[in-house]
Amino acid sequence: MHRLQRRHFLLFDVLPIFGTAAAIAFLWVHPFGVTELVLLLSMWIVTGLGISVGYHRLFTHRSFKASPAVSTALAVAGSMAGQGGVVSWVALHRRHHECSDREGDPHSPNLAGEGWKGRLRGLMHSHFLWMRRHEYPNVVHYAPDLLKNRSLVRVARLYYYWIVLGLLIPAVIGGLVYQSWTGAVSGLFWGGLVRIFVLEHIVWAINSFLHMFGTRPYESRERSGNGGIFALITFGEAWHNNHHAFPESPSFGLDWYRLDPGYWLVKGLQATGLVWDLKVPSESRREAKRITRNDRPAAGAAA
Ligand SMILES: [Zn+2]
Ligand SMILES: [Zn+2]
View 1: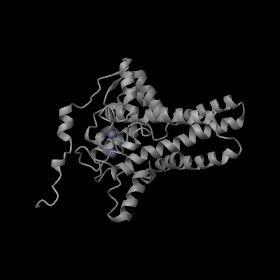
View 2 (view 1 turned 180 degrees about the vertical axis):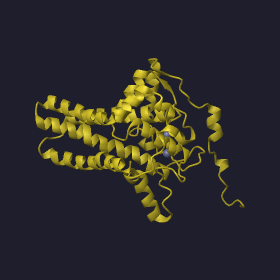
View 3 (view 1 turned 135 degrees about the horizontal axis):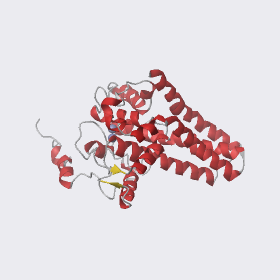
């Protein structure tokens, strides 16, 4: 198991760093054009929504119900991100919610000691070093609902093929648009490796920075925070304090004016009837958890 984790870490976490450096070097051979930009953005959005809406909101938290076609499409899109098969991702993330910022949390930045050294070590660990070697949660215990879903298990078994597909699509499109091998390589770089690199660091930043920094409008037992300025590029995942306070909610922004592209997709699919049963928390439930000024001890008040 640890050997597999190490191999996955090297292939999908370390390799994209070199891939991104190679993509920049390759600019001397083939310039960055509109095709590369479109490939990078479209593949990033598809796989990012696969993770945020599919892996996270649907499969981990069951915050809405979806038709089998939508479930499968989201599982495939999420798999192409190279962040692990859907069943193990869900098991790890449910464990994160169960033990957030306490012993057993696979990626807390707050358990590596005090002082700036401990905080820095914690950030590095929670950002990506934890993936080198970690405790593997028992999927029978943490994801029994997914194991019962035959088509989802089939998608999970083909995990490595989906990653390859996610690399082949931009390579083929690049080759066809430019009618050359260098076009194919350029497509593979920008729509494949650079896209994996960008998306994974954005997702990991939620685990690391938003468990150390950010605003806390709601009561929750761990140290999650909101980082609203990153809402758009994280597909809404940056409302991480909201999410820990109401994990059952498909909306992470909770208010219509807080940017939450993942929720926009869920609402769009709901309008077409492909998803239903959205479990958005009621106003009174939100009010009960809201941290008001009165909750904080007044300055100068006697202890
Ligand atoms: Zn979650
Ligand atoms: Zn968290």
